[in-house]
Length: 178
Image 1 (cartoon, rainbow, N blue to C red):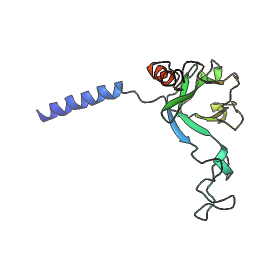
Image 2: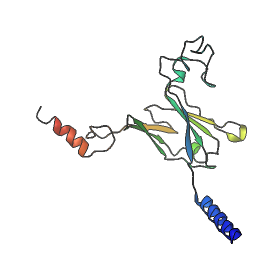
Image 3: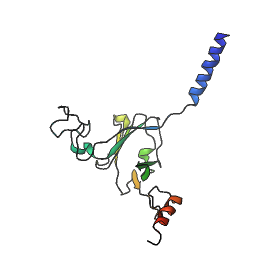
Image 4: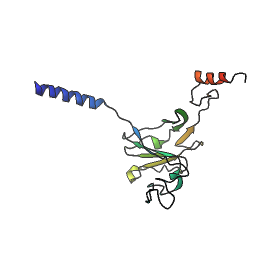
């Protein structure tokens, strides 16, 4: 009886494991260093602990390379064409970063690192067969082949959440005839 119960439990766990789906991409890292500070504080010569905390790509620079975030692809052969990455600031949608139909996004291998930055020029020379697992796309308002930023273009969106709704109407009404 006990062995049968264990077999049933094992079969149920295997069935559940087969249907579980994790994230295709995860947020791996982002820069939280302000533009006037260094990684782990201090100055260009040393951090607050007397060491030289630095980024493996940027080194020890003020602002730690500016605004950027890093994604890691989990799902092998992932197609990210036409993905929309929504960036929120204080709970409101600030902007949407759109991946284009560029072939770069059509077959990403598990382990690929995608960095999206404001200040670092794009490097889309991605070639896992040659050991290059890193893609950097520079976020800017110009549309390029691989990446674009879509600002919320709705004139009636007074709250800045990219949705025109009652909250926008309430905001407008609060200023009516003033």
